[in-house]
Image 1 (tube, rainbow, N blue to C red):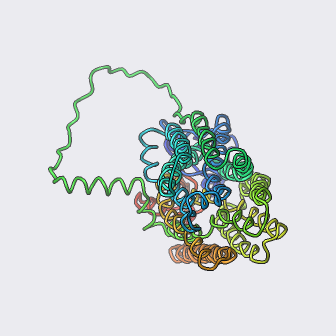
Image 2: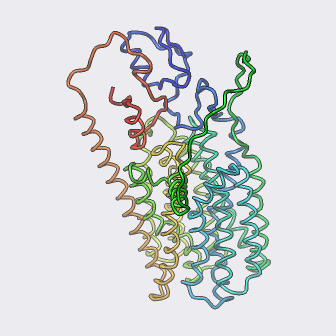
Image 3: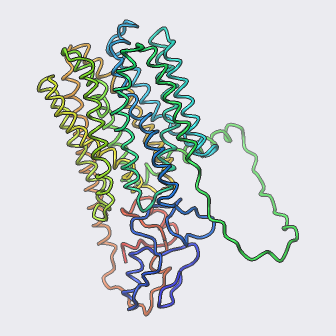
Length: 538
């Protein structure tokens, strides 16, 4: 890549737009507009949108077949993330069939949601071995078989295994690879793509209640589970179109020497005991598929994991108990299911424009604050059902809840991609999923115990309001404190007088070609290890 002043970057490095402006200002030159510097809206490593990214580097199309992958991801999220919330339609039937209490019945969607997130490390291993496409298709087969087997269960314990563990694991194998491959297909439009994919959850909330209620009236809960198992097999079709990105083929000069390569000396392997070997393998696997190093070194990632883990204790509980709360207060089953559908419609309508808005340059570096603000509104909205169990009050609740939920769902993966490198995103998502699966597992049963002991549902909504609002405040305060700490640290490290070089080279200005909207702890560690400085300090 060449500027008009003759400065040329190396083949494996590229200048960010910020770095180009610094070079131009120092050298008194004008930036060539035909020059393809990496966009400020670009993402992290892995799939970069730069056409001169060097040999062997996969280029993100930011369109093309990526739109097909986006549609497939929307459908996968509609069939996986939204499904546990719709189990509430069959809640009363399961109680009557197996003579179970609220707490015992609530374990079904709780285990399903928890396994959906806790299977992240296993999913990461499968993605590495099989790829995203095959893993999504495997998840579709597992979830379909799990729901089909659930229709033949004879006890609530068997339902825990079939609908909870098997179906939940299938959801995990479909959901996480779909989100991961979408992050590789889109870099400049990543915020928009993530927001659009999150409409899949809204699409599921909008259609699955209607479908479940219709099947419930026609076939009962056993027939409904069997048909829903066949519907979940469509994840296999969605996974089939998620073909992996291929690096560009570059034709070089033919090799003149066709002789055999010189033999390479094999490294001498030290003999270790079997216990030591197993321990080293376990440590290496955990560090690769679960980002413990990021959790220890990256303060922003650590606070995000803690905040989301605490948030999940009460985030999905209102969706599970909304229909039982309405029907327990003499509301018709159809009108109660309509509330969930309205919630899905609100999400479908508002998430695409939110995705366009959040992709604007002004929101760069502010995604986490918008996310926390929407989470605060979401938590406070859970206190609305405590006013009255009427349809009008619950309608106002689902509209406010849906608006705030749209922002939270649109930005959750974008915030995580802003904080960690894209190459570490699967492992970072895996650790986050493991942590939040704990609270997702215990949240609905704790709510069921609260209902069994008090006999009232509004205590559950009030508790969820407190939990989610406190998680939002934790994220706001912690990220503000970290940002102020970094600013003070930058001022102390800034030299009193800057040197005046005659010329600044491309390598001096931008040794790291990857742009970050928010400088992360992992980036700082990587830069210091290479003896480099951040462009923000220039």
